[in-house]
Length: 146
Image (cartoon, rainbow, N blue to C red; front, side, top):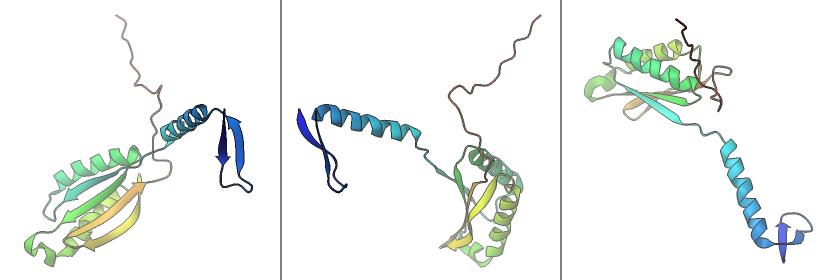
């Protein structure tokens, strides 16, 4: 048996007479359980250019919609090259259109802004738009009888 300081921040500090190995084990077990319940939010990125055509942009918007549905943040960046820097309004219009397309599942966290040669906007999932996966959640399979 050891004298273990359980709560050093309390006034006066709390100590117990117990097995130190067991105390360390239980503390590690609580940390593992807390780690399981944490949610990790990832930031996914879509990269575009001002000359990206509408069809390719729509594919990327569909990916963003899926990621937002999973609860991830999405950063949409438009990269300028050469003389494209002279026309930032083209990229701004593209970003506004993307935000409008995703307005049913996303909210703008960072409004369109320039950072060097890129213009970006950050979208976060709207409240109620996120579907969480559960452990027992599996697709339904219907069997046909003949």
